[in-house]
Image 1 (cartoon, helix red, strand yellow):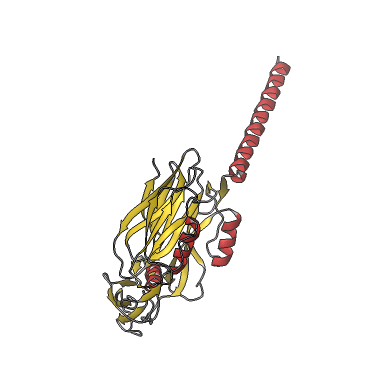
Image 2 (image 1 turned 90 degrees about the horizontal axis):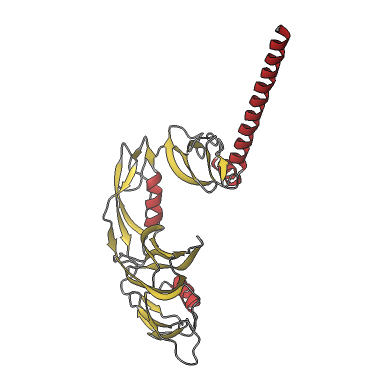
Length: 326
């Protein structure tokens, strides 16, 4: 009887041991699937590392940084990662943004000279000047603008003046160039170009434009700029729109449309970077036009699959989107 009980106990121990080993193997397999899966990865520890080293580590994990600069109490840690979110060891999807707080070195004690710099660059820089959660320097809005010979967006004056001591949060006042009043430019050759080539040339020249569509006529090639007014070579003021007529495509694929995107933006004091993109149903992102534009009516012809999403951005910030319908 005792031998029978002993045999049963040994069998029980073997079964339990086997079960523990099986559970362990399953747990290890689940861990490696989670870590090595095509869409998941482990967040590395990058705190205390140089920004360049941290970026390389994130790149190998197919992760992308969202960097925030912050002043600290010492200069030795300039360029080092102070904080990260999510924390190291977190399992996330590949392509996830990782927030990195990077040291900007010792806090400023005097206001620097911003005159001659781009207001857009300074605006972005000021957003990073944070100490103990409080903006160190803030830009007073609305800005003041003047016509000048300087490039539009160039800072002409500032208050407080450069070299002023900083004893606490400071509000900066700027006078910004609007560019030359009634500046004259030469209209480029656009008639005879394909729509894609015309949009690319517009992006390089930065003209104000207004598109119109018309039906395809016999003997014509579709999706072409068939007319422009004023003609190429004409001298016009920079705010004078060039009217462009584009004909329809000869044929559309099933599920495609050819239409005119129309959106009225607020008038800007000078041209700002504007981008129109399309997010296709396949998740591919396609740029339609990228141009410095002063605002007002924006028109862009497009040929896209139904249910694509048109995304309009100004200064890399989305301001409008719409879905492509019939």
